[in-house]
Image 1 (cartoon, rainbow, N blue to C red):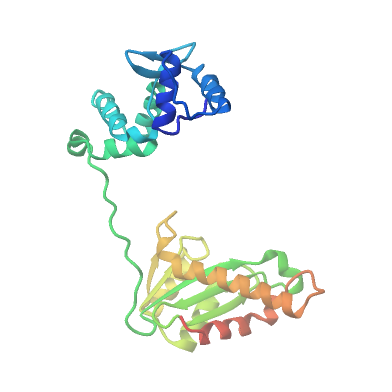
Image 2 (tube, rainbow, N blue to C red):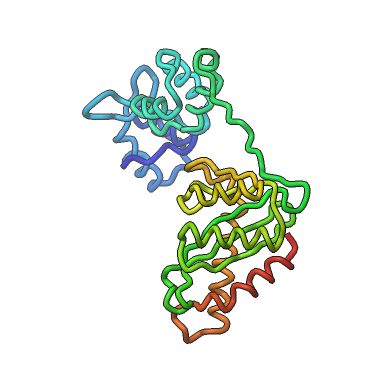
Length: 280
């Protein structure tokens, strides 16, 4: 593989070798040897250095210090195509040796023709889920822990609930993701801590069903579901899932070093307590 031309001096030296001109006297014999070997891969046409391609067109060579000249060449080529920067970069690689992707991207970005006919898509700014008082907005999600079912009296998942305003967490161990189990835990939450204004969850079948809908309607709680394949609005509860899972694992490592499977039901209340008293 031919290495890139690093600087102006190397470019001029290779040009001199190919044009049979004298080289600078301060070069060592080894440097001259390396330059001559490298020059074997290039040729000069109309005073311009090209990479010699035996099969196909030769590629024009630019060195790093000639960025402005390279940009002009790319701009001329781009003016006949008006492609996106990825396709344009692939096209430029057929014409130029060691072209910079940054140069191609900059040329595409300043093209007025593309700005008017193909304006860049503007993403709407992401809106964070916020609340102004206790239980105005809560989120819920499930953590699956099936691999620890045998050491936890059949409990294999956790229903996590977080208050967006207070960051207060409640976790309910469940023996399955059955709709009735989730509904009973949710009703217990309502009767113990009060009714939220908004309850947010994902579109899992354990949440998106008539039982949960009827429960929320009975208590006059607004139920909203996050969009499919858009986890960003669920960021707080997803982060909580990671935190609790890691905290349970740490409790297991600290207390049951000889137990292969975590008895997380022993530690879940302590983990939630430590989370709730921490500064958020």
